[in-house]
Length: 108
Image (tube, rainbow, N blue to C red; front, side):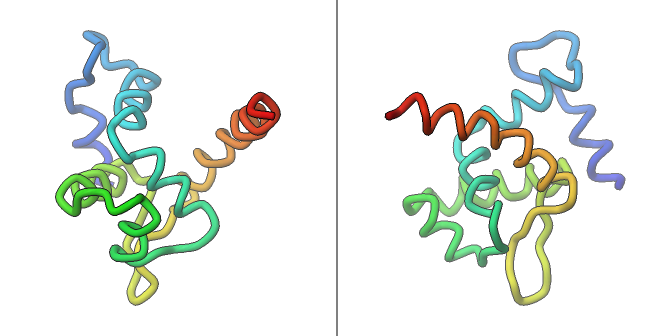
């Protein structure tokens, strides 16, 4: 829990107030953050499998995002199965499903 408190107090790009919605949008707007969450929505993935799913993203950038998402409480590293969503991470991904369905209809 201490890690969550630290990440919530960090400065937020594009906001002087650091309101929770701005902090969330800042985190999710970082390169690969949403993609990582999206790829983990169905099952945990190892670091290597996640990198492959993310179109061979830079290992350094991918690890940075994984650390940030772990600090925020959205993902966790479990023994053997790799990275997976926490209950909070699953809740976040569920909030994106209406947007996903809209995008699918829009693209047709």
